[in-house]
Each structure stands twice: as C-alpha cells, then as structure tokens.
Figure (tube, helix red, strand yellow):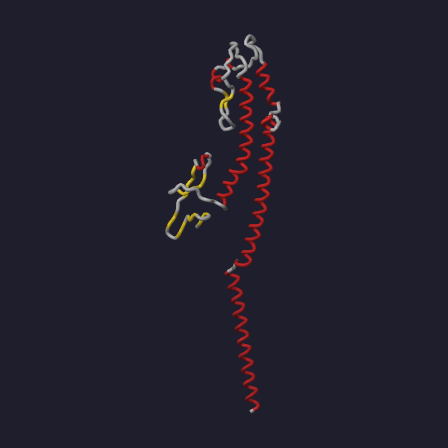
Length: 232
C-alpha cells in the first residue's frame, strides 16, 4: 500500500502514520510518518479531500473573518485610546479590545473589572460625554479602506456568501461524483456480478438438453441400424 512514493505496507514491513500539529510552522495538522516525522505526500482519497477543504475553502473563509476582526480591533482601539474615562483620565495605551484576530479577540479584562475606566468621553472635564462611544458605535456603518471600502457587516456578509457558494459547489460536485460511482458500480456488476443459483439453474437446463439430444441420437442410430438390417 502506497501513498505516492511512501510505502505504508511493504510485504512484512509497515510504516505507522500520525498527525503532526506543528508541521511547516502553520499550527495545522498534517499526516506524517510516526518514526521519521517526514510529511506524507497525500494526493488522493478522503484524507486528501479533508486537507484540501481545510487549506482552501475553510482557510479562505477564516482569512476573511480574521480580516474583519483585525480591522474591528484596530478601529475601536484607535478611538478608545483618545478618550477620557469617568474620572477625566486618559490612558493612551488602554485598549478596549485585546487580541489580534477572530481567534483571540476579547474585551480588556481591566475594563471588565472596572467599567468606569472605559474612555467614552472626548473631553477631560466632561465625564458624561459620550462622543467616543458614539464614534465607536458609528463604526458599524463606516466604510473601511482595508476592507475594500466596505462596512464590517458588508465584508462579513460577503465572506458568508462566498462560503455558502463554495459549499453549494462542493455539494453539486459530490452529487455528480456519486452518480458516476453508481454508474460504474452498475457496469461492474453487469460484467462480473454472478448469481450462483441462476448459473446452477442454467447448467441443469443445458444438462437436460444434452441428455435429450443424446437420446434422440441413440434412437436415430437404432432406426438406421434396423433399416440397414431390413435391406439385407
């Protein structure tokens, strides 16, 4: 049994395979030899399909979602660090969001522990002002250059639609492949599929026909012999 040029089973020798979560420093899991750690070149089959789905379709949608999250973090934090909290203080390093993308985005634990430090005001002497808070809220309808001049919701909706189209295309391709598989299996069964009961029944019919033919030949031979004897 081979995976491309890598032998998994070669007479009495076997190669164990395992998953390698740190392959190529991507953080993703790849299939490798358990003994050597060498990545296996999987080129077909279910495993290949799963790897392609992860590295292509899923990777693309994750990139899109991460891009939305990255820009959301940046835009919100850029506004928050310019504001003032309820005590009139400004900490120009105090960010509202932590993390770098969709995998680790979160609200700053400092602000969760003490909401009064949220810098929602644009003025030091107006603790009740909500100018910064409104600017953050208005980001929902603001077009972002790094998102192709789309809003956050528009870019996210596009990503979801793209993913939906990819899934639909995959399902259509799967149905086509399953139809081909069913056709090939049917053709194979027509050629190689054998019913023992049917073959035995046919054999008995042929045997009876042979026996009947033998008796006819014997009878004709006997009649010919009688005719010859009568002429003598």
